[in-house]
Image (cartoon, rainbow, N blue to C red; front, side, top):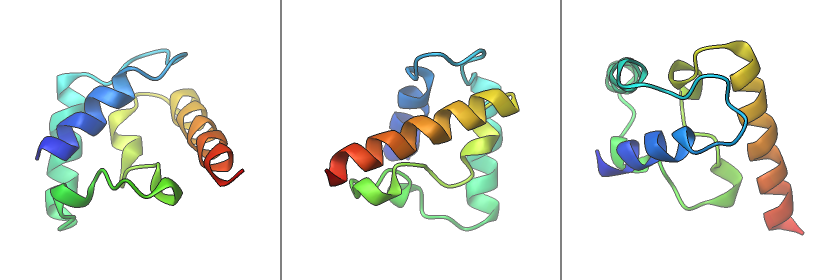
Length: 82
């Protein structure tokens, strides 16, 4: 559970989001993770190839924020490979 909360707080820190994830999105995301039987301890792996958490779109309110987050994660992953 701590990993899921850390992921939520980290996503709130992403620069440029039009609307930061709120408690409502956190609760919805946690429900989806549980329904899909995703281990909450594995949500935040330290593997640089898995920088995007599962079902991350549930935490973001609009498509622009989803695209921004995915682009930033792609750039971060690319930088760790270099």
